[in-house]
Amino acid sequence: MMTIKEWINYAEKKLCLAGITSPRLDAELLIAHQLGLTREQLFLNYAQPLPEEKISLLEQCLKRREQREPIAYIFQETEFYGIPLYVNRSVLIPRPDTELLVEHALAELKKSLTPSPLIIDVGTGCGAIAIAVGLHINSPCTIIATDISLDALFVAKRNVAKYNLDSIVHCICSDVLAGLEVQAEAILANPPYVAECEWKSLMPEIRYYEPRESLVAGCDGLLIIRRLIQESSVRLNPGGFLLFEIAPQQCKKIAELTARISEFRAVEFFDDLSGQTRFVMLKKKGKK
Image 1 (cartoon, one colour):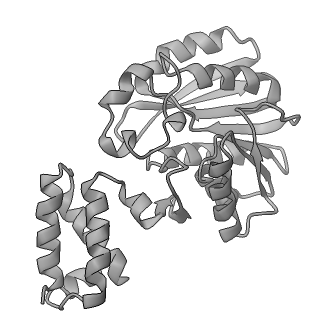
Image 2 (cartoon, rainbow, N blue to C red):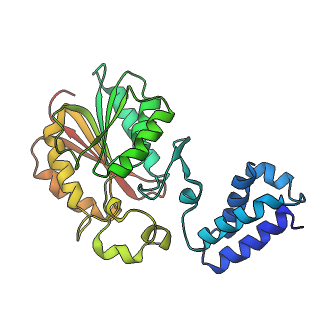
């Protein structure tokens, strides 16, 4: 009978042949998940025989990963800002870099004099940003989480309910900010920003499995961002801020876009975990 270590070695070789960049790690994650073990526990049980009833399930998971399906979709779970979230192929898998957007948002909201701020999370997907802010903000708040996809909103609502945030986070179907007749202290977004010409160069895990509409935004990647900036200039309170994610090469164009909108008084850029410019914060004129 195959031991746990032997299965990991076997799976690693198959994943390597499939072009997976982290075959050993992925093999360990697959088996640890099926056995209900942490990776640390897995190492302590290397010599244990693999339970017979797990072999078929492991083979199914391994085959899916060989076909480049992301592990988050195989497990239907990912972690964001230390929070386990349900995901499926209706939503983008939240990236670690986007956790920095949450950190910048929380820091800026902490400066706010508004006692119960209204926050909008545009294109919420699985609800990652809205939930992370809702769980970590240091004041009462209301969060409107929007998405154009009803399937994505179903996922977001499931995650919101899991963390008992139904009274704080309200999931609404909306195209960017269309139909929202509210004034917000903060508007947050991880919008689509991939240019059409870049789509074919993305990894198979992205092209074959993640929702294209959550990634691609016109010939220059700015189709949704243009709307987001324009519509936020109307929906923000004086002194409020818009914070969103971008591609590093879009900085110059975004600076030009914001310069044309008189409602904003300041533009700040922030780097991601690799030191590339990844986030933009625009502050509306008015109270400081």
